Amino acid sequence: MNALEPGYLKQGDLSPRLVAELTDRNGKPVPVSGADVQFKMKLKGADALTIDAPGGVLDGAAGLVYYDLQAGDTDVPGVYDCEFRIVYSDGRPETFPNGIVYQPLIITKSL
Image (cartoon, rainbow, N blue to C red; front, side, top):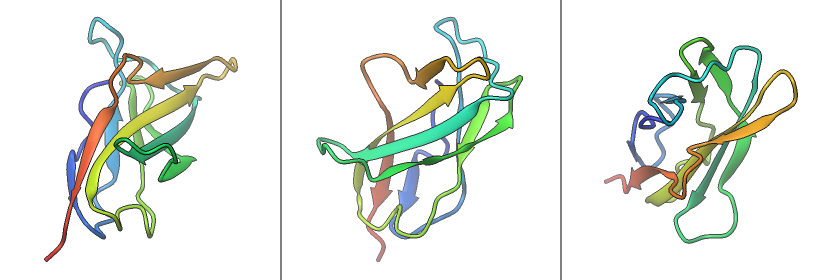
């Protein structure tokens, strides 16, 4: 998975949508046409998920997926760990990033 865009948000922001390019270990896009997408996010060091909600496919051939932020998703400033779970049309699941690190998202405090 390449970088989650945007990587930074202000507290309370619900735009822009979070977009990620899912890639294999060689950096090539992973085709996700027809797949179900789930976005998960938790405050770094926490056990409970802040978000566990459906996302979508932006461009299946290019491996582009997204999550549209909802009210309450960005209320608490902090550093968050994020991932996308994909369930392909044949029922096989795969999680991105699939290494030992999560994709970070930083929510900064509003003035």
